[in-house]
Length: 27
Image (cartoon, rainbow, N blue to C red; front, side, top):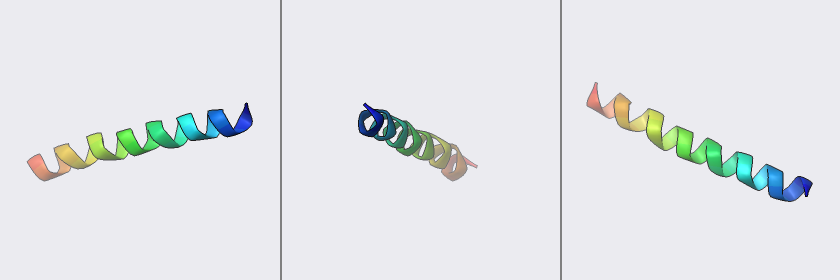
């Protein structure tokens, strides 16, 4: 269960990075 949770958190983090990077390019 811990590994699955860590994977989900890492995936969310990756998605968050992509979302934050796009606005950065827009600016």
